[in-house]
Length: 518
Image (cartoon, rainbow, N blue to C red):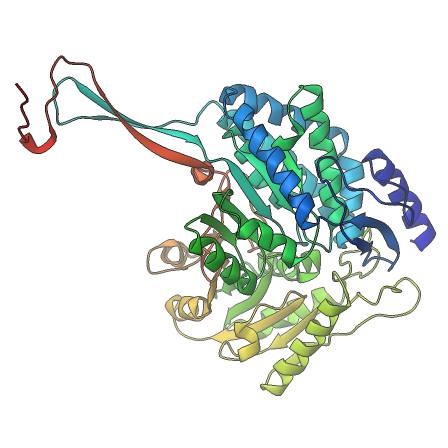
C-alpha cells in the first residue's frame, strides 16, 4: 500500500475524530488547555508527520486540575447507575467511530489494522462491563458484637484518578481505567504516551461529546500532553489519590516511589517476560499458532508478548523446526494492509534496541535460528520494520532475563518433569503472563497450583498474549502487582468505609468498657 493511499485513508479518520488534516495544523482536544511546546507525531508506518500537537505547560496543568476538582464535586453526587449511562453512551460513540479510531491506532502506533480495530473493541467491551458494574458497587453487612447495632461497609469515589498510559495500547488501557473510574464516581486526568498523542486526543474528543450532550462538566475527563516531566506533575500531586501507570519496570519504580512518598496509591502495570511451557503431551499445531501470534503480534510490543518458549528436550527439534517454518510465512509491511502479519516497531530507537538485543544474545552464546533484519527501501521508508527472530538460548543469559520490546523469541530447552520447566519460567524478575501447552491433566493442574506459575495470568493451551475484559489483568513481582479491567478491579478506584449504626437507646462500649456519666 503506497504512502499516498495510506495517508488518504488516515485523513478521513482524523477528520471524523475531530483532528485536523494530516501534515497541517494542531489539535489538542477538549479540556487540554495546552499552551506549551510543539510535539510532532510521526507514523512508524511510513515516517510521515501526522500532525503537530501543543503540549501541556505547568500553568495549563493547574487549569486542568482546577477543572477536575470542580467537576468531581458534581460528578460524585450523581447516582452510580446514572454514571453508568454516561459510560454506555461513550461505548455507543466508540461503536460509531470504531473504524476511524482503529485506523488511527494502526497508523500512529504501527500495529496491524485488525489489532487496531480489536483495541477499540476492547474499549467497547469495557464500557459494557462498566455499565453492569454501575449497579453492583456493593459492600458487606456484618454482625456487631454490641446489641442493637448494625455494621456495614460501603465504597465512595476516590476523587481524581491520574492515568499514565504506554504507546503499545494507546487507547484500550486508558479505557480500562477510565470506564471503571467513571462509574465509581471519579474524574480522570490522562497523560497518554508522547509517542501516540493523537490517539489520546481522539478519545478525549469522543468522550467530551458525551459529556457535552449530557450537560456535564468537561473536567470529568481531562487530557495532558507531554513527556515524563508532564507525568511527574501527576505523580507528585497530592490532590490525586490514585495514579494508574502502564509502562516499563524502570518507569514504574520511579512512579511508585514518588507516589508512596506522599502516601498516595499506585496501580502499576509494568514489564513482562512471558513464557510458554511446551511439554511432550502438547499439541504441536496449537503450540505453533499460540507461540507465533504471541511473539510477533504487535511486532512483539505487547506487555504479554511471548518472549520465551520452554520446550521439553524430547520434542525440542520438532517444535523448533515447525516454528522456523512458520516464520518463513510471515508477511511484514504496512499494517493498514490486512494481508500483512507484522507492522513496524514504534520508532528507530526501538529498532536499535532490537539490534543490540540480538547482538548480545549471540555474544552470550545464543544460536540464531531465524535471522533478524531491518528492512529498507520502498514501503519501508520509516526505518522501523524488522524481521521477527528466533534465538536458541539459556534462561540464565542476561538478555533473556530482560524484556526487549521487539519480536525476538528465545527457545529454551528443559529435561525431566514439568516442575523443572516451571522453575525456569518463574526464574525471571517479571511475573505478568504465562502459559502451558499440554494435554496432560496433571501437568495442567500443577501449572495452575500454588507450586506452579507465579504470574498474574496463567493459561492452559492458549498463548500468553491477549486478555478478556471479564478477568482482572495484571502481574506480580516487577510487573507491579496492579489489577485492571474485570473482576473486582473496581475497588482500587474507590475508598472503603466501615459504618456502625446504633439503633438502640443506650451506648454500650466495645470490649465491655464502662464509662458512666451521672
